[in-house]
Length: 296
Image (cartoon, rainbow, N blue to C red; front, side):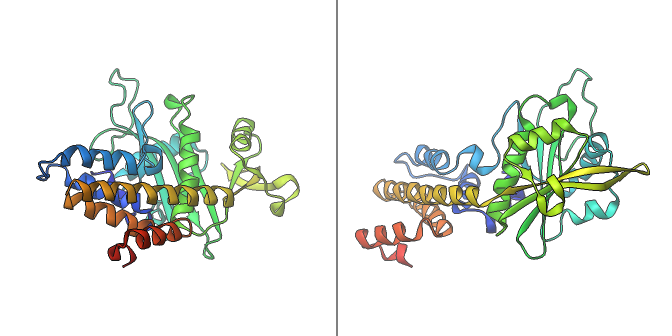
């Protein structure tokens, strides 16, 4: 439940709102006709872990950055990146148009091999992905993406990037994601290429930007890379329609078993799920069922 408080629910699909409400409902008195089991089914059916951005692998779960995480984030980025970020950089992370996802290991090794700064509530911050949305809301610039060296070779970098791109689609109207990577970092360039990024010719031939970085007084070239978000946005739209249909089906079950609390949760999920991919099916269902509340 603490994790849900970090999510910007007003911009997330209805399934997220549904999951948050279901999580808050734990411990409440349920209908004696199997309400607890049905409530659990609602949570599982409406929100997969990956969709919620909270899937766990090797004990690491991703969530939005919290102010209490800043000391741990500074420590991680100092260890990861040659660029040194000033105080204003960290202050901006909580400004409109910015968001940061962090990977938290709730139970880091206790054998002394991990000495990172603990985050609020315990655990260790081991991965980060920060995004800045341009003022015209067309481009999402990925400012930082990194994984603690002790957690590499586990696919965390790819997970962080996928979640970052997905969150960009869900929280903005951006059609393009961009980033810069040091040209000498061949492994990073190969990683981004494998994830679907391409050279941004608008920044220079083959995306090469001369002297883009100044590190310890020395200039370094960088490659500008871009990622077309439109196919991902279309895929998410199809998922949106699927989530709405599942919410509709579960609402019928809630009505059948007479569980008002779950019926309300499903109605909330439906309301928040209305979009281009789901509006027509929902209206057709409302008409077929003669359900004026769905139309409302």
